[in-house]
Image (cartoon, rainbow, N blue to C red; front, side, top):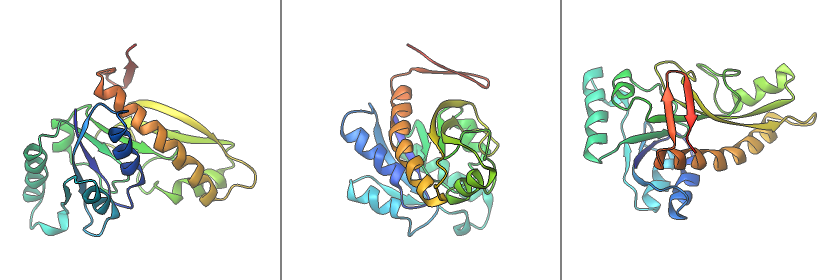
Length: 205
């Protein structure tokens, strides 16, 4: 499996995937890292590990067709057959979803379908969880489809919310779970252990 990792920010989940590939815990190769931000630290992480780091932003194109063509062409150029979103803050174009159907994953810092959708990312999620009074939150890895945070759920892991948690302390606890859960799910894909049937995901023994 040859993965492209899409990231917009600092890339801590990217780093956990890089480390897991390096340790032999994901039977895959990271073919490229793509960001929509030129100053994303995710691109710097990629370069430190001799992984091509590429910025493609819709703002740099006069029309949508040119932007989509550049993304598809770049993925083809690097021989990508799987995409892992790791803090990528743009909606994936339907043309990419169609080409990589059931081969694009995302990680979300809550137990979907709760606390998902447009605008629900990062610290905003953890603040909403605490304000709602939840005692349990967690992490979800899911297939990406045409709607925000909607595709079939592959794996979830719970994280307790303590009475003294702040959005920041909760974010730290959830992130630690993300860093272990996401590589484990990617390894299932690398070993062809995931079967998707509509909204149902089966993990094969």
